[in-house]
Length: 162
Ligand code: ZN
Image (cartoon, rainbow, N blue to C red):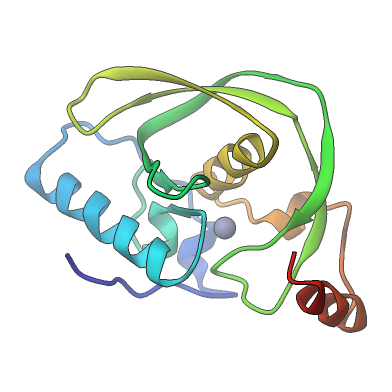
């Protein structure tokens, strides 16, 4: 496994739309492994293809330690409710915003064996699904945030270690 470089800030790749994975190859599986390692080393809970320079519909998520979700060609098929809370991104270090997202999301995706799976998420997992799938459309959370925290608010937020 290898740690990949995470693209940051104004990198134009982060703004591009990802294409579907047509065939799951050995390279796809290596990419998934490397993305999981990269996400963990960066202490993230999710990582999307474009963030490591790969414009393919691939997402990894680990909201609960040890429970890695690998999503190929993910699609939100149901959403309901609403939650408002803090959100950050490995590609936008040093910033946090307040974002309103659905409180329940149902996602359809292929797993690494090419089998279709349905995932349901509430709370943080629902937020994470929305955030990571937005990356595949070139959308970053400040685009959809209610507002971004000021520098002062950000410092307080970081000190609260929440
Ligand atoms: Zn992100």
